[in-house]
Image (cartoon, rainbow, N blue to C red):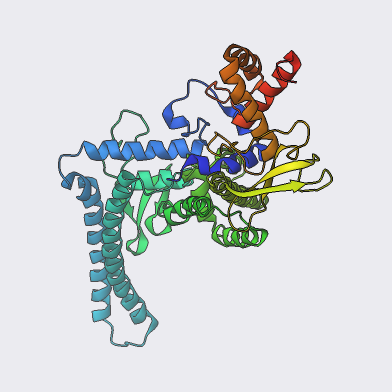
Length: 446
């Protein structure tokens, strides 16, 4: 799956929609929580219970025959149907044999009965074959985890019952011991008693599959964008939005993404909203739009992260020296000698103040000063000349008065915020600036 760091932008967008952070709790089982610690929608937890039950029951079987053969009750049902249908056929055939007018309505009615019996036998044979195949595919799909956690719970219950995996008493065993006795209805159609009602096999819907191609593809694309080191342009954002609108026009794809990829992408709140409004078209459209917004924002954040990483890895090269007047916009308002730094083709050079012009009072030789591009969180768009001068002064002070520098650092470091692990978060430039200001107040720097 995609790296969670690639979708932090989507997480920020999610908080603007619904504060899912308020739903974080303690003491929930792993089944009830996503990898990011949020409560899963009940649709997900219930579907995973169905999956776990199938895996457990399949693991207890001694042979495949326990699973694929028909039960005595099922066999008896088929035998009864065949006997009754053959009796109908025999009676109709006998009636036809005693008729001489093959064009009469009575004759045609008996022929229809005979054809109906033949068709019912053919239909029953086809449905039984399909049912056995579906039962194997259902078990394999559950055991391999290919069915979506976003399946509608009623459909999950129907399939679980129909294929003999219902366990309503919670004893860890199938209530029907992997058998789901069916009745054979008119025309050779098989039906199952589900909740007191007979559900025709032909009217059931197979479980929804996880849309791995779409979901994994969308998340992996963020990595591609990040590695490119390019910002996501407005035109690229519009094109991506159109792609998402097309992809999520299919409601099954939308359900799968929301319920199956919540460990990688923040959608728990949207899953719960869908549960609360299962047949509300307006709400589903709202959910679709929010998913698209979060994915677009995630793409933008991935591009920004890659761009910043690429820029921070560029090592500046010296382009020589120049002298700027105090009113020259390339400088910082001070007249004097500047060192020129370039950050690669196509980038604007930065001018680092080196001191007053040679021969002027107060001239300073900083020609050996370098810029630390390896510092944690360094940003090449910062004011290079100010940060470098402060770093140079602090470096010199660390050699002359290390105790003074340590005292200043200890005093200012507590001003920085902490991350989720309790560590202070700051860049080297931020730290240098704070230390510099503290030393100025103490009079250690004039």
